Length: 205
Image (cartoon, rainbow, N blue to C red; front, top):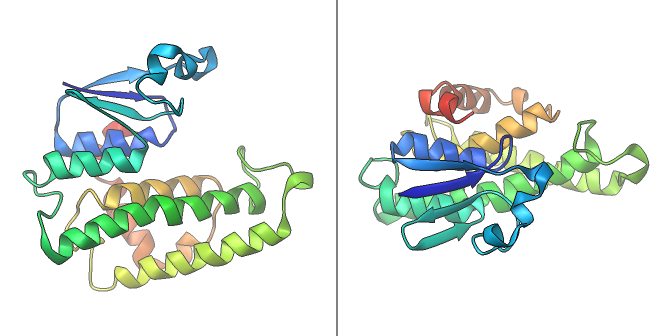
């Protein structure tokens, strides 16, 4: 049995979404961050970083959402038609999935911290205009990169796959936090609408 450790409105949401798309049976273990359950010794044996998500699948334990997503994709996604087995599409799937976290999410969040007014942004006095400009430039480049990828495609690989989950989860989160660049790209906004209209997304969120 798969066990997912999580709390709401966290990077665990993208793992929830993947599990719902896969139809894999799993146990949902909600931690209480206010009580510090993520810092207790029992949980630290699962995720030594003391964050969510973490996932236990049989005798294997994973932390970091991108590692979890790649595990689920390779073990369960091929059979479900949600992850390419091999070849150029497999290489693209690996690359775009990792990119979604280490590039898109990372630069997007740094821009939110320094360049937006949101509940998680730094106080104005603590923000860096240079950091906001720098990260905004990278974020715009990545949004343009994704807009170009979607020319002639409904999804990043053509058909919907697990690749789309971390990308759209990040874009949705950035939109909620006040990043206003996304609506200027019509293919991107249509892509997000297609993905977030899926029943599995509603169940996860």
